[in-house]
Each structure stands twice: as structure tokens, then as C-alpha cells.
Image (cartoon, rainbow, N blue to C red; front, side, top):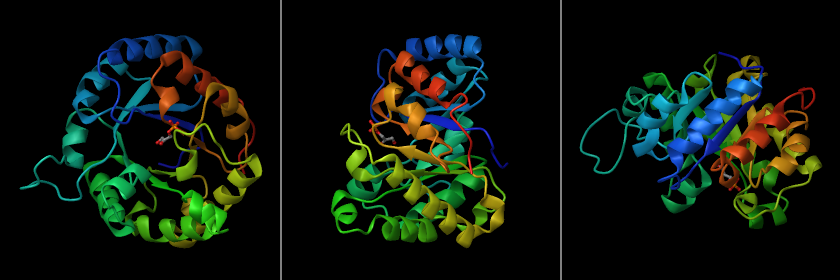
Length: 255
Ligand SMILES: O=C(CO)COP(=O)(O)O
């Protein structure tokens, strides 16, 4: 339902072969000791979901990185939300910029995938974010607002989900927006979410994603309206991911 604790989610993208289970075991042991107050999730490639769900135990939720909008059928290479759920996933990342750009995913497609995820019992993490060109043209807030209005299906009202604000130019680059820029966009995301889905989403987490590391996590997570992080590269090593989770502990108030 409505989440009040922060959500720290790792997006392994197409990485994690080999060392994955050892990293999950290390993370699980460290989390058991640290007893974090935030919600922790890892989203590995689909082939690792089932193994990781078994290795992760209760403290770490496992998610997919995409799903098909249809429930089944002749869609070679695709995976349904129910298949992810069956493998042990509890959430799924949708509309990541690498899929919007690399696979031509539109807002409408992302919205239908979110409906499929909800129907299968998965919590969607819906990604939005502007390109560098759009930011430089002063259009960041406008672009993100329009993505929210068209990518969030009305079926999300009252359901467990999150939005992730990931400026495309901050992903994997080591660049991050200023804290003021993060706050500005997160406030705009909240306003658009409420406009679209009503006041019931006033506490739904809005994650920040894009070059989150242990050394910048605390300050980013303390920004008003930042309800967690979606972490790429730094989620691959348990020690780095833990550093970010620690940054979420007592990282300040949310508004
Ligand atoms: O795309 C991201 C998470 O979905 C962010 O990736 P990085 O943390 O590697 O910049």
C-alpha cells in the first residue's frame, strides 16, 4: 500500500553474471545486522530473478527490469509480469530510459505494462526523466510532467508503486543534478502524480536515479520529496549498495 519508508532499489541492468549470488548473500548478511528501516530491492536480469529471490530472503525484495503488457502469447524473447511474479519477483522497473530509447517504448506502452504488472501482483517502478538537450532547453519539468501524465495508468490509484526520476544525462555518467534541481523536479513529479491519481499518492515514493553513490546518497536522500533511490552501477557491489542504504537511514524528513 502507501509506503512511508524509503525504497532503495538496485537496477543491475545486463550485469551480474558470476558474482551475483555471493553479492546477494553478503548483502543479506549485512542487512540482517544493520536492520535498515528502508525497503531494499534488487532488480537483476530475468534469468537471475528466481535464484536471487531464493538467496535474498525476506530483507531484500527482487524485481524484474521490464515485462510485456500482454499476459502470454507469440512474443518471442519477451517475459510477462506473471512469469516474473512466479519466479519470486515482487516489483518491476518499467519505462527505463534505456528501454524508452533503445526499444522505442512510448508512454502509452509503459502505462499498459504498468497495468499488466498490477494485474499480476507486482509493484511497478515507473521511470521518467529528461535528456540533456531537454534540460538545456529549460524543458526538464515539462517533459517529466508529460511523461507522468501519460505513463501512469489510473489503475495505480491506491496500489503499491513508485516513480523514479532519472535524468538521462545523469545515468552512468557520474554527473548529478544539483540538490535544488532534484527538489524542483521531484516537487513537479509529486504535483503531476496527484493531478493524475489524486491525493492518495501524496506519500508514494519518488525515487531519484542517476549516478547515486555511497558518497552522495545521504544528501540526495535528504532532499524533500526524494523517497528513495534507483541505483545502477553502485548496486552491483554489496559494499557500495550498503553504503547507499546507510545513507537512507535517518536521512531527513520527507515533505
Ligand atoms: O539507470 C540507473 C538506474 O536505473 C542509474 O544508473 P547509474 O546509477 O549507474 O547511473
